[in-house]
Length: 294
Image 1 (cartoon, one colour):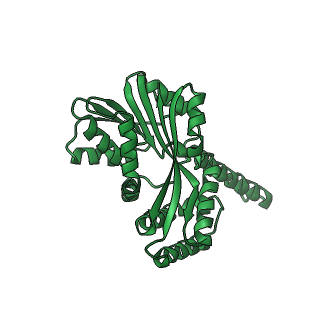
Image 2 (cartoon, rainbow, N blue to C red):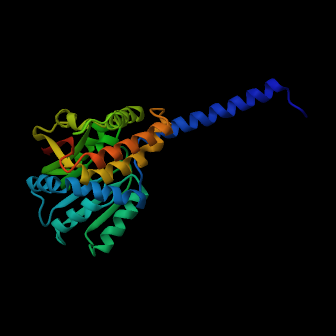
Image 3 (spheres, one colour):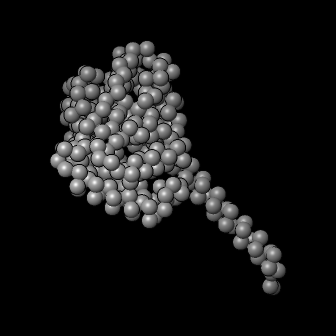
């Protein structure tokens, strides 16, 4: 039986709208815009090298030591999980949590390769997962809340994990603060598009500015808050940033924040600016850091 053209068009439109709605729903359910698994490991490890010393000092202030129980929330590539596990030793324990099975797999492999046996791995969404309350000495998260929508409820849950006197340790991005010492319209456009991509996904890539208020709102009354500015030589930051452009390409294009040609032009122009900027060129960026005691 041959259907009338109007009916055919109606059916086609119905399924197209259904497909679009499914894509939009998937986008809403998955605000994370970065790669996962082995593809992300190298980038995350290189990024870690840029900020490691500050993270280590931050954890020293939280009295990270042998025998402590620590939650590593959003463990990613596991580079900080390994550090934490070494610091707490055999008498202590680390719980590595991530929503991505791929990230948990990468972290597990790293821990096994390091010969450590004091780490438990949990795959789950911090917005919904059930975890034991009142047991942790430290709950640690770096560049995690910037990818979350239900930030207040997640911080409240982090607080519930802590024992009395335990400390929440947060390190978060202020994406819009990224600045290149040399004039580069392409660099500025890329940073602006990333902040807009976060907004499009319903998350806040500038959340580092809000950590103190967020912790106060869930009942922390002893808080040490800092805004830290990093000044990074372009020779060190270039590999990570250029890799991030490739990693974020589909998200930026999919959100209609730039065309494929524009992203290609950004990468070429930024790479050239980094290469010709000279040994004294640098990128600055700010982060919000929090220690909050229960």
